[in-house]
Every structure is written in C-alpha cells, then in structure tokens.
Length: 149
Image: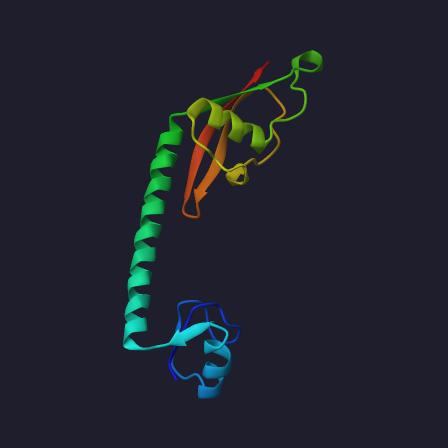
C-alpha cells in the first residue's frame, strides 16, 4: 500500500514523505487509524504537491524578509545606558534582553533576545558589533553603543 505521512513515523519516514510499500495491516490499523498518514490517492498526491509548493514560496518570502531586515540593521545602532561603577567602569553587564528592549524602543521593531549572539559579556563602555541570527541562512550585524547613564 502507498501512504503519504502526515507526521514523522519512527522507522518509516518523515512528514510529507510518500512511502511505497507499507504492509496493508500496518497502514490500516496504525498509520491511518492514528491519523499519521493518508492513502496516496491521486488527489492526496496533488494536495501534497501544492502544499510543498506553497511551503517553498513562504520559506523564500521569509528568507527575503530576513535579508532585507539584515541590510536595514547594518545602518542602525542601538544605545544602551548603564550605571558606572568604581573608576568609570560599567556596573554589571549588558544582556541580550536589554539590547532587544532598547532596539524595540528606538526603532519600533522587535528582535528576539534568543537570536542575539554575544560572544562574551559586555562589561565596558564603548561600541560593539553584535551578531543577530535572523534566519538559519541570514545573520545581521547590529552596532550597540554602551554609554554611561
């Protein structure tokens, strides 16, 4: 029996795969009964093809938006204020949450704090270039100015 998987099935395949020789009993009693897949009729195969084409189109659009956002981010810099401790040194360090909040306040756009990559903690005043992962294939660079409050 030929089956299209709707979910990942261990030892059989991943979601969206078309499996040719699945035993009739396994397909009817497990895969179809638990809605892990559907029978590969011409109509279902066509639906799968259309869904994959739509998913590819959406993925390309998301990638394009990420590239545009990365280009836009290159010209921007975010200012973060910190308290000064002894001898003019920064008191504490700047977190990704503070950078994301400052970016949202200054540019009215959101960056997920989990996507900001800090190679090391920012503990001094100055300007830093921070990597922001916008998409698995796209990373932007954001300049962060740390100033005394």
